[in-house]
Length: 354
Image (cartoon, rainbow, N blue to C red; front, side, top):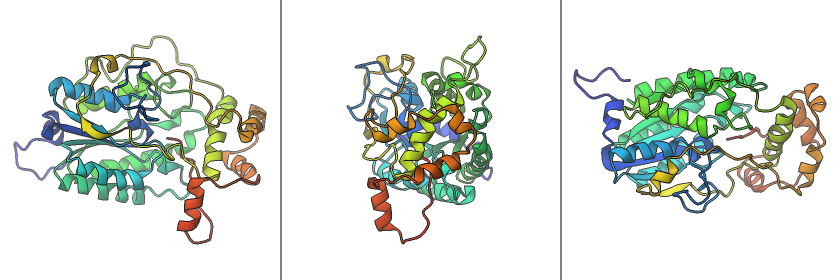
């Protein structure tokens, strides 16, 4: 953190631990929205929105804060699939209107999928949003990206994640924020902390992240964030071929048609209010198996279902994308907006997964 303060000045973590302002606002992508950690049926304290049935580390952190301050007001503006430009732009605008005391941010996971990714440019845009929050008096917790390199097929993104995390740590230091480094947390290299899509945390993963954030800001959880007590050997969640067919190819399909998983999805909890139903929400409930990302009757889904691991092994992800691109498509809503908003020319593509 910043070192120019006079002796005895509270650190950012010490300031956050007293929950200034009595309000907490979560910003971010699908990680802050809680995917893939579902509440048990009928126990969600949120409204019936597409993201309202998910809990996640942000809800768990809000529950921990509520134990210290029962009148804590909590809002969650996160939307799945969002990149830094939206999170540190539009979501910051919305957050400032709520006058938050504490803000947590997860962002950057979707940006690293952009073929034109530039860690410095992404961090600069991130910092502009952070400065606005700090200027308004909010304490900011920046949650970094976990190490995706331990997951098969995702190792290509490890250097991008590491580069962005290093720059975000510098942003946090310059702006007297707390940076939560998930990259070096060994327990988050275990596949049992993740959904079968290998990208989103499951219930156990979100609990680990919540405890790690709590530890960093002086609000410890009753369990260690460094171990889940797993004694049996870790196993891969599914084969590479099955994973590519079920998750990667649908993600490429969305990208090539200009869609994201967050299209038309409202914020999880747009207003700041005390978190009700806290007792039910604190229960650890394993997430159910998630359905396919495309409608069951979609002709593209039926075509992709014929792909096997043999089809994938001989091709890189880029080659698969090229093959899909050659098939005629009807542009989705996001693609239509893009074509009207940008001049003609090559379009950058990003396989947003979060």
